[in-house]
Amino acid sequence: MLTTIDLSGSWNVQLDAGKSGLRLPFGDTMRLPGTTSHARKGPRNEAVEAGHLTDEYKFEGWAWFSREVEVPEAAADCSVFLYLERTRMTTVWIDGREAGARDSLGTPHLYELTGLLGPGRHTLTIRVDNTDYPTKGGHLTSPDTQTNWNGITGRIELRFAAATHLLGVQVYPSVADRSFVVRADWAGFGARRLAVSASGFNGHKHAAAERMYDLDVGGGIGDRDGNGGENVSSTFSASVRYGLGEDARLWSDAEPHLYRFDVRLLGASGETLDAREIVAGLREFKADGDKFAINGARTFLRGKHDGLIFPLTGFAPTSVDEWLRILGIAKSYGINHYRFHTCCPPEAAFEAADQLGIFMEPELPFWGTVTEEGDANHDRTQQDYLIREGFAMLDAYGNHPSFVMMSLGNELWGEQVPAGRDPGSLQSA
Image (cartoon, rainbow, N blue to C red; front, side, top):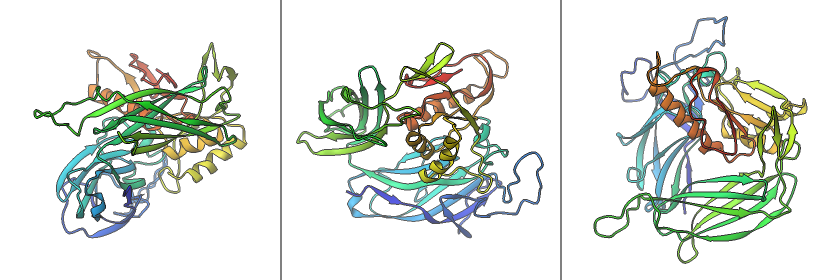
């Protein structure tokens, strides 16, 4: 079955600083992934900044990107998704019909386009807005660090899945009994069993046998239609405990042993409906009095502050090899901890940190006062956004063993807010 279509390459582009709307025809092109500044689009910035980076082709406003996409007949019965790995606030249109909007600054934008993008030729248009963020943005949008760029970086692709498909897989380690709780969420009917196996790598070859788990399909979120049929938009969830055995290897900054999980959703006849590969590590990171401990042993954080500063491009890289190079240099000097100031790095950074053994601490893009209802200058919209963004970060990157801490922002003062839902990572308030 068709799984992805890579959308990297030449796109039509139109800069709309005044937000007046798209004007056809397009008069220029640029390559995505990339940013308008790095592609040298728009008027040259003649200002010379002394207090922060000077963006040679600074642009703030709406950037319109469009291209033709060809969906083959093989995708006729598939669910279709558009994946944008890293961007600003986006709105998507298919053949002139709006398909939704996303506003996460630190996690991928995923659009379901099922019903809008069938077989044939279509026009895909994406509007990227780097103004009027629901939060101040911190170093994710600051001119001091990676600049307030506009564009799309990392992977840009269409993803195809069967009508019954996995929405996500989360794994939660338990060092005490050498096991993981594996949570699978899926959409559609017909799933009957979950198959889980794990094999070790990154310094060890320990493996655990595949195990089958029967699924209780009566607990879906959704309803059947009035005629007794099935509502295919219904979603389901199941959590199972998967033991690795007494010989399981632990992940730490000294010995970053990893496991590759193969999680398969099976139908009534044992056929694979969908599958996910998850990389995880068996570790426990927690506070031990006034110290930190990894797997029961006290550790010392030899940390580095990082604001995603890449002045040669103005944006963070999204390749694992580049992050292995960057973090590897820090590791060679004894660094075992990165604190990302009011920002969250791309997934490639977590993958590299998993392999090298570096404790990662991303932060929400916020710097200021946390208030409650009734307080002066309370901004409910901003705080709701930050809570959503925090959960999105946990969903997107929480499986990585290197993701051990998370902060709600920088130099916070005011009231405390809920710290999050991941029992495997520490949160600061």
